[in-house]
Amino acid sequence: MKFGKDEIQKMVLGGLMLVGLLYCYFVLLLGPLGTSRAQKQTQITEVRGKIAEAKKQIKKAQDVENAAPQHNLTIKHITALIPEGSPVAWFPVRVTEVFKQYGLDKTVTRMATEVPEKELTGYKRISWGIELPKAEAAKPRNIPVKGGSTSASDQTQPTEIEIEADQAPSEASGG
Image 1 (cartoon, helix red, strand yellow):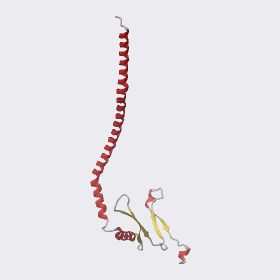
Image 2 (image 1 turned 45 degrees about the vertical axis):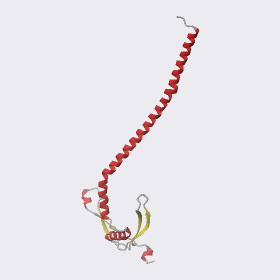
Image 3 (image 1 turned 120 degrees about the vertical axis):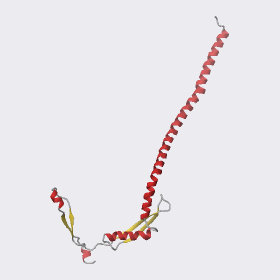
Image 4 (image 1 turned 135 degrees about the vertical axis):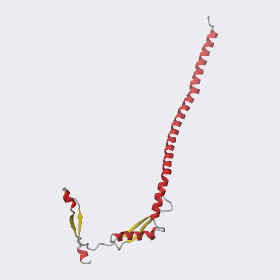
């Protein structure tokens, strides 16, 4: 079978049209689809990361909810220890009582600063200053100290150390 000039032209033109059609299919139709698919895969990866982070946050929230009853009990215990009213009224008295237990009767407790608490609205951070009396000449006293020896019999016997307080010359003369 012999093809004529017109038939050859039609076959070449048909082949070129087929090549053009395949080119348009791959470049104009599949190209944007591939690009869109890659973008969607990236978005899916980002969303999966956000989902994982959200699951961690949910887990933390559940842990806080589970621990809340125990923390509420602790807060109730602490609140029961704190007297009613402003700390300005009861804190200096309590501090004075504590120092009296150690033989310091003339302590003075004063509020130094009062600053609003940034993280807890309605609360204030109060700093207190405590004035302690100067110690007069301390009496010599013996303090038993255990240890310091390697033998077992020596460790049971306390070693006594004598401590004496010296007055400075200006304190001794009264000036």
